[in-house]
Length: 464
Ligand SMILES: Cc1cc2nc3c(=O)[nH]c(=O)nc-3n(C[C@H](O)[C@H](O)[C@H](O)COP(=O)(O)OP(=O)(O)OC[C@H]3O[C@@H](n4cnc5c(N)ncnc54)[C@H](O)[C@@H]3O)c2cc1C
Image 1 (cartoon, rainbow, N blue to C red):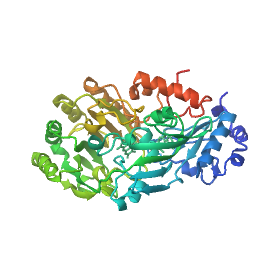
Image 2: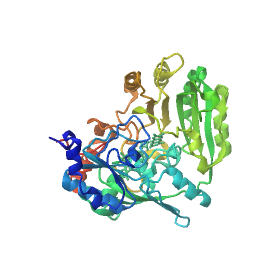
Image 3: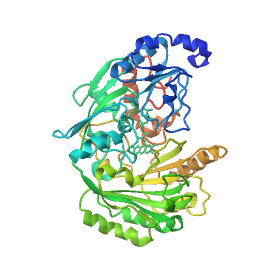
């Protein structure tokens, strides 16, 4: 019998003492505070044995120590943007209350607590003209994003966001509170950048900030009928782009709801996202080619303060159910374009909300100053298909997205990025990591989490 099979009363008995071990509020099912386990991605079933609303590293260390002795697992959630199902053999540490962020404008660094979102860091850095290398949505958690590498809207220019991490503070599966830098516990410093929560729960991270006060960019949105013209032109145009420019394109079917601009609501549109951090005149000239391909129905491109970086993708803010399919491509050819148009273009019958193609390369392709567990720097493009798996079409949405990714196999590297299409399926580690990285992550997990307390979600372990 596993803990999951125990009736509720026995589970409650097994958890007796958690409150005495942890200073932070603890909530069991049905109690006030338990609702804070609700993730941003409402498609994930998050029903842990207990929720610990952590406020300090010691709350986390004490929870992990307790769980290790009682045979529970522990997992962590900040915002739930990358949530996976959590069952009743697992204690969930919610870090959402740990939002501290201190900027050192002279050193150009920020020390960020486990539950902070990128918006917290953008707000703290902006008054100093400094930029935090976030992803497309400022509402995503800093630590969840960085432990998956982090591929943001400036990725071709600045590279992987995790390459700008200076140090982590963490709790290991053995309940130790450690610091990881290139010099101190360098194995953990390597594995935490790409390995998600395999090696521990990060309690704080120190990152570099860049002196980027503003950017030239935004999105050009076109009517869905223009998708063939725009996508074909985008594919050709990307080949000429310098690495000072980052871009992605997305076929969108956004619902009619508050927050969705009227020209984009309830129909197919296509968005070209664009960011340049210098030589704004050249950037504007290059974009003219796409403006000439078709007439935008909405144009948000301009010189914007860096703090407005979230406006480029304008990702959804409110919690919603989502499912993702994802793959990395070696190249984006005219044939690839036609496959995507047939699956998600006009009259395709696509049920997907977003089909997103990000151009990679540039600075991302170069290893950072300190090697990390992030793999697949050689990929040229990332494709992510995002749907809303709502009954009665939930399964149809998922299988249609998987079918689109399967059709891209001829151009796929077979790889995936750690942050996209989160899943705890057994084959995922082999797609996210090369063999050596997988081996070393699993070996380090044996060392730092011998009891397997963190065996939950997308962690890398030797197969039993
Ligand atoms: C709208 C949207 C936009 C996104 N844009 C991008 C993007 O541009 N680029 C990109 O790379 N990714 C992007 N992502 C993916 C996102 O980076 C991951 O889902 C990330 O894991 C979310 O972190 P979170 O803390 O917000 O989510 P959570 O669901 O709270 O955490 C997800 C996972 O992160 C890890 N984690 C969280 N906190 C800790 C911790 N303290 N210690 C150790 N591990 C931890 C755990 O594995 C956890 O299961 C996006 C996701 C969404 C939904």
